[in-house]
Image 1 (tube, rainbow, N blue to C red):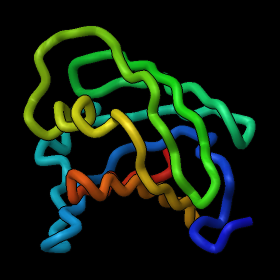
Image 2 (image 1 turned 120 degrees about the vertical axis):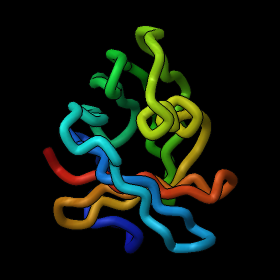
Image 3 (image 1 turned 135 degrees about the vertical axis):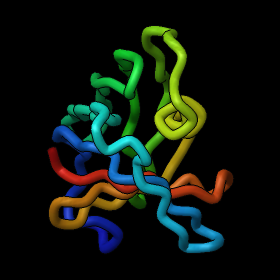
Image 4 (image 1 turned 90 degrees about the vertical axis):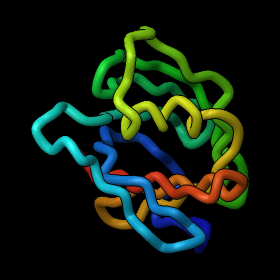
Length: 124
């Protein structure tokens, strides 16, 4: 397995813990702890994969491809179109294009360097 991740798969159900600003190292946790948050289920065979889940307001789905060097390419992300709060709405902007990933223990990190943001998920 590559040194950047314990696993070469994103398969599992993950709850978004927060967004880490990669410039300031500041973690923005879900401000509404009583809501359902963002939960995504990834399923792949270490190559092409699918995403199903929900944000605070919407059901979501998507596709992705795992590339060498712990890189993931999100080729499609969509869902229902109800209004989102600012925190969960950020998912829509991030889940486009490529990101670095790492799965370590019960944590999944998706690093979107161009947007200077890491999505930090915990196993659900």
